[in-house]
Image (cartoon, rainbow, N blue to C red; front, side):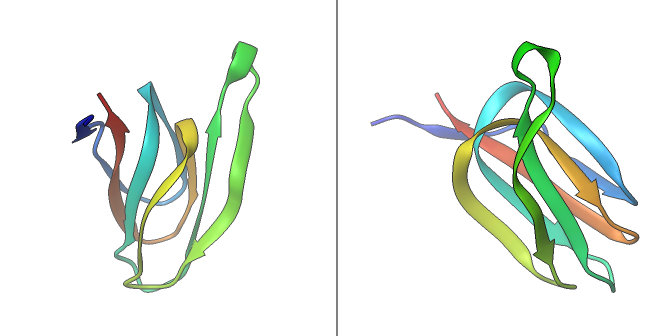
Length: 90
């Protein structure tokens, strides 16, 4: 059986793109703000950004914690606070 580890925790207020050094296979993100937030997961094959799970919406207080296709970056559009972390198998 393989283990799952969390790494690269992040938090912020406002929009940003976060890049991770290792590909993730799970993402946990919490919308701690009073308005909705959007996020997209992606990779950078050959240096070109490619996003999937485009514009997933989290309402205030919601948490997204799921297995997803491998990703190396997350693009967040928000006006309020959020926090999260990726996970990967080792």
